[in-house]
Amino acid sequence: MDTETLIKPEQNNNRTYFIVFDTQGKIHKINSSPVSELTDDTLTQIESTNPICKKLLKGTASIKKFGIIWDVVKEKWDISRRSSTLVLESNNNKLLPFIFDTDKEDTEIFVNIFYNDGTAVIYANRDKIKNIKNLSDIKEITTEETDLLDIYITKQNDPDYLIAIIKADPLTLFKWGKQVVKLDSNITNNIAWQKVSMYTKPVFKNYGWNLIASENQVPASGTNTVVQTSSNEDKKNININVVDNKLTITSMLDKQHESYFEGQRNLRIIVCNKDPDNFIGSFNIPVDLLLKHKSNTTIIDFKWPAEPLLLYKNNYVTISTGEKNVR
Image 1 (cartoon, rainbow, N blue to C red):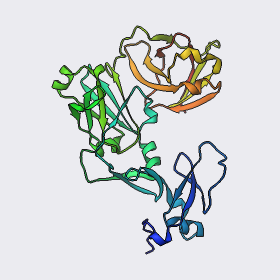
Image 2: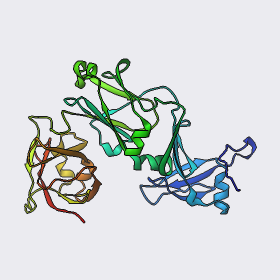
Image 3: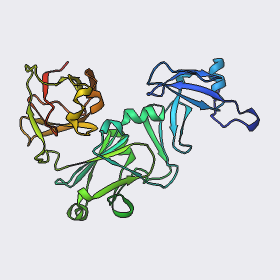
Image 4: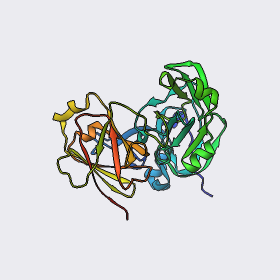
C-alpha cells in the first residue's frame, strides 16, 4: 500500500515551495517560485518545505486528498492530508481570551451565558473547524488531554485570578455542535458576570462569548430600538429576506452613513416572536458590509418566526423583512 508520510525534509534537501490557497483551505496552485500577484482577495500564499509538494507537482499524489491547515504547534499554515479525525492539541499552556459580544460565526468556539437560567451553552462551529483543520468531516476526536476545551472564568482581564471552571466535553460538543452546561449554584449566586473574563487553552484561534438573561427572554435594555417589521415598507434602509435558515441582507447604506453606527463593528439583531418576551435567537451583521450598499447572505442556527420582532441598538437604522419563504 502506498503511504505518504508528511515528514520534515532532510537538511540537505530543504526545497521551498509556494502554495496558493483560499479561505476554505482548498489548494489552487503549487509553484517552485512565488506568485507575484494574487488575483483574488480570498487567496493566500505560503511557503512550505513539505516533500509532499514535490509529489503533487509531479502528479504522483492527488491534490484532492490534501489541503491547508493551521498548525497550532508551529503556529503557521501548512499542507496536510484531509482526514475525518479531529486532533485536539495545544502548543502551550498560555491561555487565550474569549472576546465578548463578538460575531459567533467568526469564532470556532462560542459561549452564551444565560445568567437567570444558570446555564452555559457552548457552541462549536463545525464548518469553520473543518476548514481550518482540513477535515472532510468530524467523525472521530483524538486528544491526549481531557481539559483542552475547558473554560476558565476569571476576574476581568486577569487570567491568574480564577473564579470557576466550565467543563467542556469534546465528544458531546462536536457530535451535536453544542453542549448545555448547568452551572453550579455557587457560580450563579456569587459571580458578577459583567466583571469577569473567560479564557481557555489555545486549541483554536478565535473564541467568543455573550451574556443573555434567559433563553426564553430577551434582556431588557433602555437603549434597544424595537422595530415591528413589515414586508411592504420600502423606506427602510436595510431589508432582510429569509429562505429556510438563509438570510439575505440588502443594505441601502454606504460610507456616508458611517456615523450612524458610532464606532460599532457589528449590528447585533435579536429576533423575537411577536413580542420581546419570546426570544428566538440573534445574529450579527458586520457594519463594514452594511456600508457597501449591496446584498449579503448569512446562515442562522434558529427557526425564523412567523411574526418576527427585531431588537437592536441603533437610533438611525431602520429594518424591514420580506416574506418568509420555506422550500
